[in-house]
Image (tube, rainbow, N blue to C red):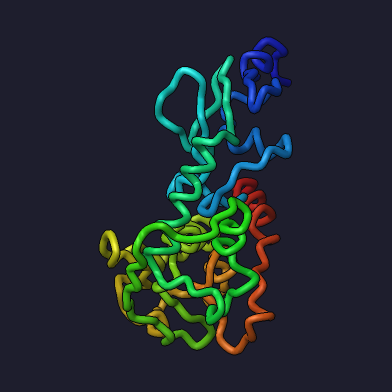
Amino acid sequence: MIDANVQRARTKTLTINDQAFSARSDQTILQVARENNIDIPTLCAIEGLSDIGACRLCLVEIAGQRELKPACTTRIKDGMVVSTDTERLRKHRKTILSFLFAERNHICSVCVSNAHCELQKMGAKVGLTHVEVPYLYPKLQVDASHRRFINDPNRCILCLRCVRVCDEIEGAHILDVFARGLEARIIAEMGRPWGESENCTECGKCVQVCPTGALNEKGLSVAEQHKRRGFLPYLTTMKRGR
């Protein structure tokens, strides 16, 4: 049994949006916020996978600190005062989303994930009505060599959910990131066509966690491209229990 004094030592108190909360010392701001139904926008964070702070949408303001901090990777501290919804943060999130929309070819009307896309929903959620930076419209090669799945890097936001689920949950780790900047894209097996991979288990977990139409299933209509993610928390719990 854990000693009561040790248990108290592991508990910290903080304030989020003028409300006081107690939480475990190993929790992040995002975890505490979600447990208490406080919404913090994210695209790369998903329950069941490690947090990497890639999308920067979950940045929050912490009293006494000039820089914004990612809620998904920042551990709580005793007495921390956090704001998750300020004018500065709302402006920042619109800017980040503008960059994401402009960097690749996110034309919703011709996308297989139209109406199922997290990027699309996030744009509506934060009130993004237009993109203020020039569209880049890259022409990255689509990999349709897999018998079941398609990898379209033109719709990828590099959240790395697919890389993490393939490594952390499936244990195959055939997906990775190649190149940098505008040329950065997800590759399989060190750059060989996905369909020639000898280690892909065809589990489809990468497709299910993809927030956009970058990874999608062949043979399904737009209305059928609904992502199923209920398996993630369950598989994570089972893996930790081994």
